[in-house]
Length: 186
Image 1: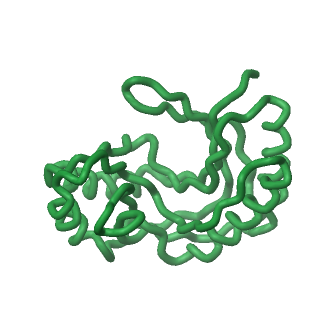
Image 2: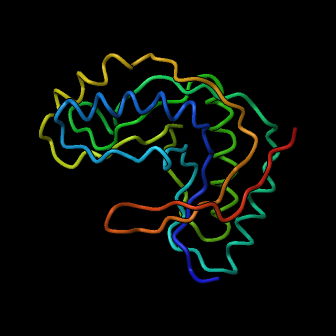
């Protein structure tokens, strides 16, 4: 196995992804300069790792397997932008109930993975990135397009595993594939 560009994620089911596509369609119609995320690439990013050597992959999997948080329900709800509405860079769908448990899993992963030499994160807000803002063009239209979805529930799922994903960058966008999974205890 060669060096891979990798990240840790929580998967979301197709029925939730379908509902998120309504938001993407609204953003697309707004005329804002946003690169939308393809449906198959929607997920909750827990930790971006960057380039990971083959011998480190097994250590990362060991950290994933060390998570003691049991399986839990996670609600997908609402929309917003990072860092703020004045300068939107990332368009997201949020995590409602269960968000505190997602944060607990993140804290464990972040702390343990730092011991392998990876950077720790200052802030973590559980979310699903649905688009990246390329320029300020259409900012107000973008915010109006998101307005109707601010509190919208998109569904709930059970978080039962952490997935180590590979990200291959291509000219038409990233291609994600699963490398390994670690199931959470029942």
